[in-house]
Image (cartoon, rainbow, N blue to C red; front, side, top):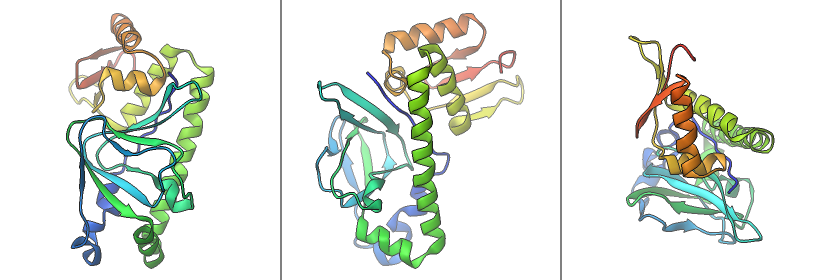
Length: 223
């Protein structure tokens, strides 16, 4: 399995959700999805963008031989389907709920364009977000093509430090409180869950890190 990952350290839900704009709040609804439900599939009409209010969403596509290619697993506050803003009229990827209780805030392209037209600062944030997303995507592709699995994992952990980490005042360790399972991480760096488990334990034996289900701690002596 191949994959690409990207993260954003800004909760876009707070910035973009039409519930924050009075003229749209009354006519706006959230959509709920169960695990493995599709928000959209390839070739669907691209007439909305989506914000995650709760849960996780997998973004990907299928190769010609039927293999699933995971591009991202997104969490609360993140935006997806943004190519519709740029003029795409058909989806070239799928979006699928990962959790049993995923809540999505759909925004029509017309609404987005209206918000962007009426608010220059809002428009700048949207285009900045899209630009950063494409730049991160390009960098991840280079990593997947030219780095071995262990190096991809270590660099992935560096990304998690930026997005979900903080420094422990007592130990100096980098502590990462993240929302991903080992299966998620495996999908995002293009390997298997057993391989991730083996590599994490190798790094633990090397005193590089310690970990449990919801926390990874990069030890000070290795940081």
